[in-house]
Length: 348
Image: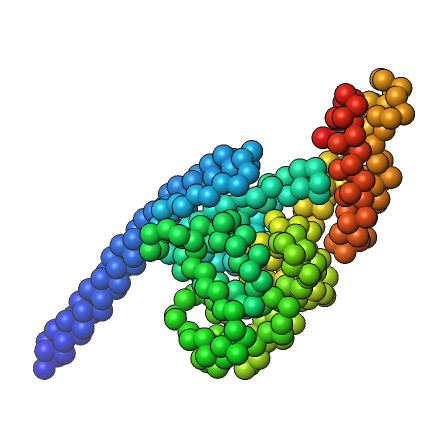
């Protein structure tokens, strides 16, 4: 009997030993698999980052470009300061970018437009994906024509932006959810309305912006009011400064408000843009003084007061920058044309 009990104890101990060894082996191989997964993700993330860096570098000096990139189907989170792949952020530096918060899918669309006020300040970058759905509501004909000419629409399925025009505001309520990761409703001079089919969609799946203006052309858009979904309605989407309404400065800025998905993203990118504008305006202010000192011809003078107003407005916010640009743009353009007519050095 004692011998039998001893044997039973030995068998139980052997099983416990086998289980412990088995667990250690499984843990070892699981750790190796996790390490391989991390290394694979790092390599993949580095490859995507290299492609994006090439995109930003190549298009940084070129305006009015459109690129469609093949990318691995991994989420890319984008903010105005960086983009993140597999939880590894990469700084964007001085690049001014407008994008949804997250890009998924196997295609990514990159575009650039020059930001001019009236001299060129920089290129704006736009990133999106065919999986993001943009619905443009009540846009005037002139705006629709310009958007059709500007955006990559008439391309093979899955290659261009997914854009729909709805001219009758009474049809907004019947817009159907199509399982896109995000739907952006863009209203022109009309209050936002959440389609009933989107009431059960998560808040991150839909957003809206209302663009206001006179709309004789795209440059007449004056401001953008940003909205986010809360419950069964749209509410103000506030940026970091607590505002939901921001000034629009030209076509490039308007397109940024349309493509980005949050007020915070637009406000941050435009803050970078106006800081760049201040630096460029200071350079042109110095050039104006240097030209006058070199040739001493009063008729070759420029609208330096307009440059001074733009420089000082940068610290006062986007609305004040827009006011300074609107007030000084005509005089800057006319003085530059006048310099060309009189064979003077031009400002820009």
